[in-house]
Length: 133
Image 1 (cartoon, rainbow, N blue to C red):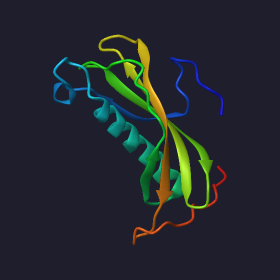
Image 2 (image 1 turned 180 degrees about the horizontal axis):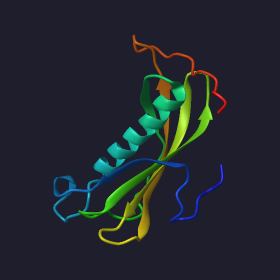
Image 3 (image 1 turned 90 degrees about the vertical axis):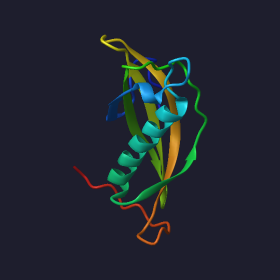
Image 4 (image 1 turned 45 degrees about the horizontal axis):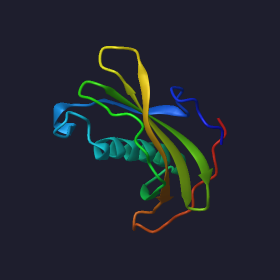
């Protein structure tokens, strides 16, 4: 897969939310776990859409935080399905901070999340073939 430029997102915007005071550490930086949670939600949304049903997160490849987020920054999370197996898929997830009261956007982190499609009993199920649009 081609790498994106530092401030050019890869994939489609899936989640957009504002960082609030309750999401900070004692220094006023947004917790990395909050960012990762939003990324997992975005990956799950993309996974459900592609798998046409329930998915669960089974793996997150390494994640390095590039820049901090502050209260008031808007977190933008972009997703792109990288590969699909029988019941699992890898989704590349990128997080950007649109800085408070500006149009400046900085990449915060990225990672590849692996999701498995499951049935109502929680067992892996095949991912349907892509529907032509």
